[in-house]
Image 1 (spheres, rainbow, N blue to C red):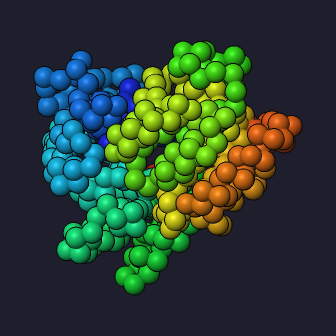
Image 2 (tube, helix red, strand yellow):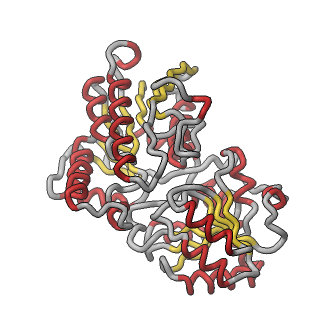
Length: 411
């Protein structure tokens, strides 16, 4: 098949969604497909276009399997400025649409268009490109927007909320298929389609995955020594420092358990709050994003990982970091809604413990129990790589995406 991919990030950009889409593309390439990616110039790490990529609105490179065109993302420079971020998404989406729909070249006729959300604006753009190029349109949902933004209070303007929900429903109805990460997200999308159900819109669950040949446990990780983390137990959060994550739980843990080293690794909208807390708490360390190739050693440095998600977000978001943590053989404490996808995953894998979201007492008790029972802690961690190999491998995901893009699978 000839496939066009529209996504907000792609390697070498460091965003989690970029890692996911890069893996999807690599899997499809391995299965013999021609892929043409339209994405942004790398900008996620510092929320501005990286210096070596500046100077042009777009850049195109030809690959052995197709091409990659990168366009300017118009970053706001401040993740907390929602208006500037929204305007940036609009500008980026317009450039993506113009680039992907331009006449001639390899866009004359395609078999399928795969667009990723967020940003939600790529939905209608993907549909339009698919119509012009006479291909099937598949909409890949990583986080259900605007639900997460509304529930965290990031968006409060009623008119904006109504407009976002209308755009969301319209984008779903225009798609031939919508792919989501869990049954929870499928229920969410199906409920929004129900009132005006389009018979041709399938909702298909394809969980995220990790490269378990690369992402493996690292013994004696130099990360500890490099950042002066000592030899004691480390409890870590690694990922985006956003408003959806209950990072106050990690700060409270550091305050109430001074004998434990607490590490928050990453950057994002809550970076300043985390950094300020790290200045006053000697056992709390804020470490910025590390190069992607260091992920195995970064995750392997911790004894326990925490995956916190605010109350009510378990049905609209599936933190993909969970798969990576399991792959390196570390136990997970998920502070997340009961019965959500991550809670079920940990129970199925027997690789961690789920606790109620935003519950400091539950986190303290669970951390104490795991640190006090090193044998159980190691046993939980050992189950992770086996579960990932059986359930979250790139090969399984690639086949699932190929089937949906070809129109051979219904929801």
